[in-house]
Image (cartoon, rainbow, N blue to C red; front, side, top):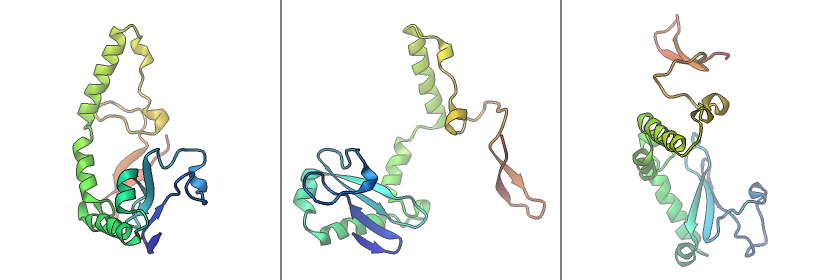
Length: 167
């Protein structure tokens, strides 16, 4: 493990090869079979991330080589100082932005799945908006009976602020 205040990484133990365990993993298979996992953080404002590396790659390039590990996470850290994604490596953010579905794409896919299920004999009434139960925001354009978050303007200032309202 290497630590510089908010910049750190920790390799998780490999089951059946190392004597120590991590209580956070419990009974789960972490790292996944054929992988070596690390927990790391690159900025105090970001959550802890998990990196799973291919076991063959790890054996060849990083196993028993703390300098190579430090170099890997140093390179990730270098990539995470972009203002658009401070603490989150920009190449990963760019991939996320390209792979992410927009609300319109998500709604179109949802409609296609429901239509296919109805065509296969399921009732349309079985499909309901679960956003209220999951806490996820509803797609824009639909009327909402209640809003959990609203944008208000303070009387003292003209800048918008988020305010939580009760449901």
